[in-house]
Amino acid sequence: LTEAMPGSFKFTVADSPDQARDQVRDRDVAGAFILPSQDNPAATVVTNQAAGMSTAQTVDRAFTQVAQAQHMQVNDDDMSPLPDRDSMGTVSLYIAIGWMMSGFMIILVGSNAQPESRPLRRLIPIVAGYAVFMSFIVWLIASPIVGGVGPGHFWQMWGTGIVAIFCVAMFAAVLERLFGLLGVIPIVGTIMFLGIPASGGAISIYMEPALFVHLHQVLPMAASVESARSILYFDSDIVGQCLLTFLAWGVVSLILVMVIDRFKPLRTHIPHHVERIYDNPLEQAAEHTDGAEDAEGAEDTSDAADAAEAEPAKG
Image 1 (cartoon, rainbow, N blue to C red):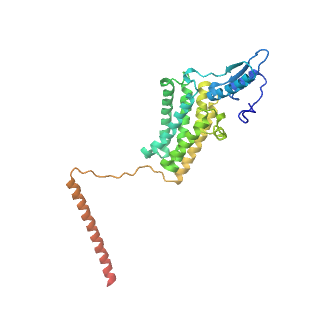
Image 2: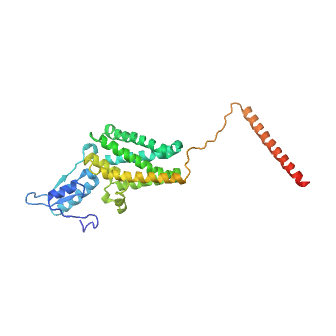
Image 3: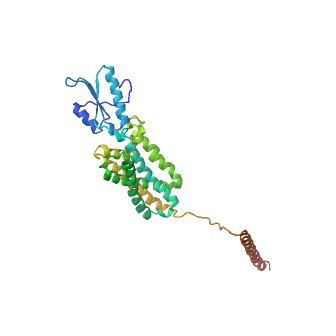
């Protein structure tokens, strides 16, 4: 594999088959290849579907080809097989997209539809209540309606979603305050266009360019996918780490919003142009005539005042 695909794989040697399986189960490695022995004459490819279907498929395909080239019998051993309701392992990605879109949409829509909500003292309670509601809606769609989430995960999913939605909303508030409606470009670019490839939810992060591998450690979309995946299949083992990522984005964004509000005037209303509607066209013409006469009278008065001022100067 090293000769055929240089740089594609990084190999380590485990002390025992059990250690190799533990490393795959804990997601420390993407997969393992256990050589034949006297006790087990067949080679074994160890994968972890729940950690990422595309990763498991890549590892299985690569090692199976190696074993077949050596005329070895190959057995598959999956540490965390996916259930039928999530056969491709993408439920965690869809949940993460729901959280992320809920987070920035409240800012983009609310700042224009209801600008009175933009001051921070009003925005925080509104976003907090909205996050509680939308996290429940995302769970409702993913679990009872679609059936992608099994029973027993409500409280973890709901709580994690609340934190994720609120913190992403604070990040969106920073860019909305700086760029207005144009802030949608960097918001969607950061959260979605960079976040989805870096999340590992659809394509293995090991198959992405190096940039996305680094972004996987810091972007909220990646933290959302990993936290949902951890809750569903790994007893919430890394949810705490993902929550720290959310909180870092939320706290820093909140501080930036406070700084921006101190130095930049905050728009809290939308200017409206009022146009009177007339039932009678004659009434409209009469009002326009009166307005023109008033304007002429004001102009004559102004001219008279100018003449009065000029007369003493002439004398």
